[in-house]
Image (tube, rainbow, N blue to C red; front, side, top):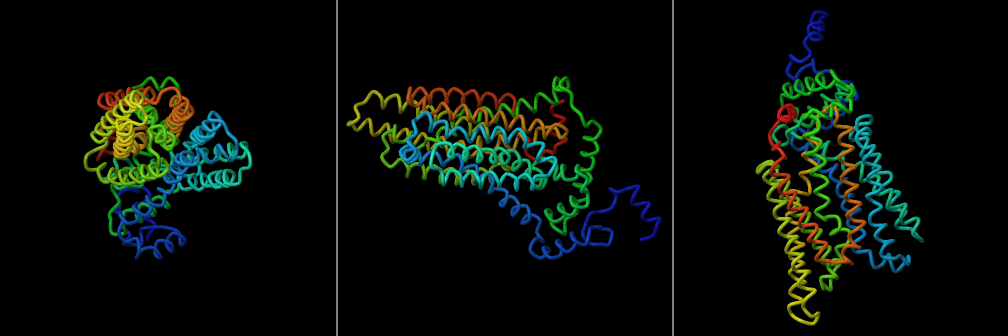
Length: 441
């Protein structure tokens, strides 16, 4: 290439099509060898994206293990380590305390070392935490392991949805791809990665230009003052993100999964551990359906249907527990109420999984402005885990007070969530980050 061509390219870096078909596509020999060796397998860009999503989805699976571990093991842990109900409630809630700490650093960590690096860091405390719980001989090791688990999960809970939102194709996720990798100055890496993710036969010119424009816009103002949050473009998306994550937790979902075996036992279900396993299986299946529906029905509509279904299901459980307290334990009606409460919990998990489970995290990652995403994302994630800690810490105590009363509280909160979504949550399906942000001004 001549000196004149080099000058022209430097003046207009956005003009040339980004297809891997010519010598202009510059990359290091390391990148070239990696891409060449992977080309045959990853020729279809959608395969690359799905593969990446499946790998990072191991993070939420770890979160599920952490949330669900305390339920079927409650009786055994209390018996082996001679814990009281309040001590076990503390054990169950400590993962949320650790997650709060992880949430505080998650945003900045993802900015400095990247999404991939953050997920690798999160794996370390998770491994140590599980080993601590497995070999615990007293409550101190048990509590330490639970805290470390939570710390890793706190990092995961912010990083995974943001990473998925950034790498997904434009028609699947309304946000810009790989913005933060480019912000860190790794332009060659970012373009090479995007070409692999979209497919080698795909013209990524428009997407790369859009990303570079967004970066240039965000660099115009690198610092945010507290007074700036009075502007609607900042406080409104932050309210939506935090509001959804807090209301998600106040639905009582973590209380159900943390202590489902105990809840089923209170409902008169003899095989409570088996019912808990079935509940988890149903959640996985419902979440799979939700991932298919999300980019077809839209976030907002699916969220309204989900929260309305959760509200009605929780109301059914509350009524069943109330009537169960009236009927004699040896009567058929008492056992029917147990089955009714089980059905209500199953319905609640299904409705939660098809919308309220995943969509708040997705919307949070989409609505937050680029220049405050790290800080605001950490605040939103911290609020979520703080609420989760309050719910899991009080669940056993509330159930001891009144099972019907506990689920009535969750029902009222879920009813308010329907109103919140209907009034304030925007639709983000099929919209770019710039389009979403312009709607807040």
